[in-house]
Length: 151
Ligand SMILES: CC(C)(COP(=O)(O)OP(=O)(O)OC[C@H]1O[C@@H](n2cnc3c(N)ncnc32)[C@H](O)[C@@H]1OP(=O)(O)O)[C@@H](O)C(=O)NCCC(=O)NCCS
Image 1 (cartoon, rainbow, N blue to C red):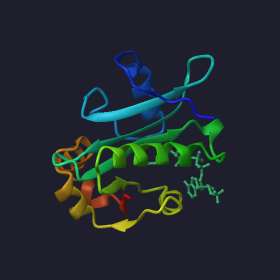
Image 2: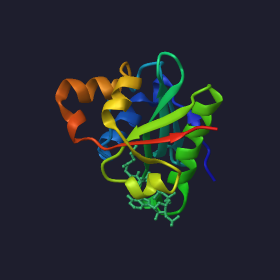
Image 3: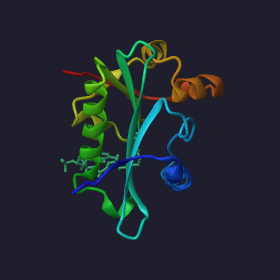
Image 4: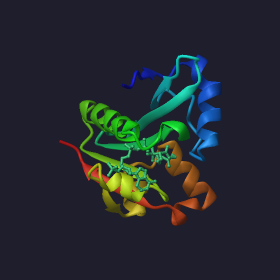
């Protein structure tokens, strides 16, 4: 059972270390425009995270920072975390959810995402931290984009 709580400034250091450990983007983690949630174990260690960032017009959401600690994987937690971010983005009025994922395409397909044009993602979400970082570093051309409509 997931007990997610919104990431607070006190989570920042542990959250950064956790996402570094699973090789996900670290930029924008302390920005109020990036909505993040964390789940901690009874001993206080971060077990999972999820989040999203909206476009300026609110129509598009970039899902990001969906991660489960290795010892908790393959038990449905990742799907629950992804659904949490998607549902919260939809509740904020977003019409489409987008994300970058080079390694976990089959996971996202099971959640209704399909392959998307990375350039269209960048056009619709130009101000998000991931798009700015990937554009500046040239990594955008190596990224794989995914998208799904929101109800
Ligand atoms: C991707 C990730 C969040 C999945 O978490 P999880 O808790 O293992 O996911 P679930 O247990 O909900 O898996 C759901 C389904 O996707 C499948 N799946 C999970 N990860 C997969 C992967 N990397 N490749 C292929 N299939 C995968 C599972 O087998 C499962 O299928 P099933 O329902 O038929 O058994 C986790 O592997 C992770 O944290 N990876 C590192 C961070 C990352 O890459 N995040 C995504 C980019 S934001």
